Length: 436
Image 1: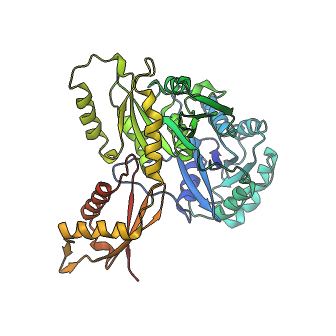
Image 2: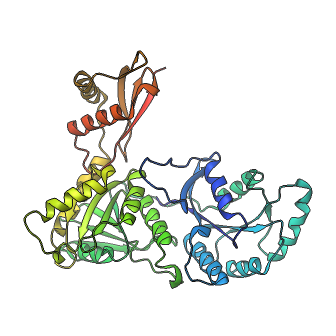
């Protein structure tokens, strides 16, 4: 199910990013950074009162060569298009400005709830100053000090109160997948080619107002799929369509909704740094991943071209060593018929459950071959392991001391588990826990 989304808007230097970071870091569960993977701070997932939501910091979407007021307008439009709840931040020290009134005029046009937050109200005696902001016509202002964390709990309560109710019920038997990648790698062409194969289109169904249009189709074996078409999204303001951070945000939203992610590379252009960043988001989110090299028909190839590409991909995407690679062409439909079966294989791996007895046999065999390490005279003892979750498969290993589980030994155990079971296309998580 897609998470509801909160966007933070306002003119520059009012503290939007400070509020974003305060909400993301306080209480609140935020996915930790994975070594070697860059998390873009424009978008994160947060939780308050057991309710999860996605959060966008529009201030981080910089629009090159765009005039001041036009940039504010574009960022507000992003929020109005993408969000379920909008947090409008103003500066309590400077009072109401023309730019604040300009943003308020834009927000009048949306039917989304707007929460007016007056930041930099550090002194409780100055709370009377917030009454000037009633002139913006957006309801009761919430005084906060983002730097000191004062008042953010009230803002979070208001956010939760205005989030949409969770009425959507998804069919767990339908595999949801999306295509992510840089602009012009051929995502839209691939989707059109996949749907143009000899398959039954079940129904084009409209997503929520914050999502792209989804399309359902059924393969020859009767398996239902939902394609999340981020590439087909069309927004009002063309000014921010091609900005990298905005495309990252859209990709991350698609990842949140997907079971399997197809990371699309352009064979003509090779691998870019942006490809590694955006693939890292899917890995960090624990989604199934397939690396798809598109436009394969455009290359002059010899008998080592594919092997060289595979070696390059494995070198550049070392954290995706588990992801299968497929070379396709949306133009000629080369190997496209293999994609649905590969997506099913990865989805099955994401949902695989290993009986504890079988899992522990594998762990004990691994220990027999590679004895547990020691540190300052203390030896790691592994008592038993059990699987606690799927999507991705997650295993808890009970030990005598958590700090004795060195990263390299955990990687060895992961490799042994992968050898014993088919976890193609999915990350697996190992958690060390001290036995009580």
